[in-house]
Amino acid sequence: MPNRFILNETSYHGKGAIANVVTEAKARGFKKAFVCSDPDLIRFGVTTKVTSLLDEASFPYEIYSEIKPNPTIQNVLDGVEAFKKSGADSIIAIGGGSSMDTAKAIGIIIANPEFADVRSLEGVAPTKHPCVPTIAIPTTAGTAAEVTINYVITDVEKNRKFVCVDPHDIPVVAIIDPDMMSSMPKGLTAATGMDALTHAIEGYITKGAWALSDMFHLEAIRLISKSLRGAVNNTPEGREGMALGQYVAGMGFSNVGLGLVHSMAHPLGAVYDTPHGVANAILLPTVMAYNAEATGEKYREIARAMGVEGVDAMTQEEYRKAAIDAVRTLSVDVGIPTSLKDIVKEEDLSFLADSAMADACRPGNPKEPTKEDVIALYRSLM
View 1 (cartoon, helix red, strand yellow):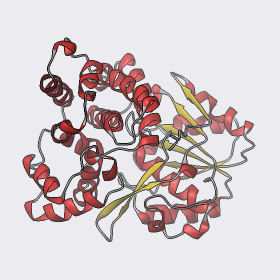
View 2 (cartoon, rainbow, N blue to C red; view 1 turned 90 degrees about the vertical axis):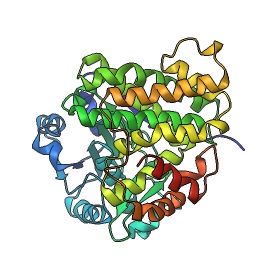
View 3 (tube, rainbow, N blue to C red; view 1 turned 90 degrees about the horizontal axis):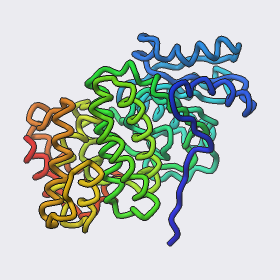
């Protein structure tokens, strides 16, 4: 079966890249933008870095900011109505995964109104039309939603998150400017950075991985391992390395899938509102250990990409442990908690495990888990 790769039509990278937002909007014939951005980014003036450029060019736009950190079905529905009233013909998504996921769902429903029931988008929905043309500008270095065909929405009524995978939702333009990420606090930088590392590692060992995706994922692991500590300390080199590293990881995993870390992290976000990157970071070393026997020699290359020396002289057991230890050390160095004891409740384990097993990311895991395995993994971190 042939492998498929889907990427943005155009992407810009580096300091000052946001200067291209008006040029791209006008070149594509857009007349009015529907700007999706979350309330905190508006309050702290991050969104203004982009809207000021629109103002200077007298380019019309309307802002929609009814977006929660874990965007809900209602956020999407309200956004669809706001878009219809705005008269916009395009979307500019400014923010992290929350803003971009909301924008993707809005754009898909506007272009495919038969999917107005947001729940109908779960999994791989058979939409027929590309979403409203979108320019995506990330303010975090983690989700890579600007280059992926995935988005995640929270179903508050059912206390769960669901993953949507749709080639029609990818933004036509991605603008990755490290200056847009410079105001991220340390905790958010660390969490989103570990999310990006999880994307790279899970994408590298997932069942769908192949030569082209491996190339992206190993480079992403190298960039993130080299840059995340600096980004947490807000160095220009760290910010720039993370901006590129998380995008490169997104280029890969969007096309080959993820695994059990994400499947277990999504219920933690839905039930406890745990930040996605924090959940991934806590889970990653433990799930890596669980998956090790099904990964062949890949942990040797993960260890090498993370800067571990002497891996060629190590036994399989040694380089697998070295890779897991390098991940755990990086997570601790950037201040991520190491356990779920203050998050997970024993009485919720069965529901969490059921949710993880039903998650769209789970089939990509290199080792086939059982519900009992998932419960044991959660419990081992409590």
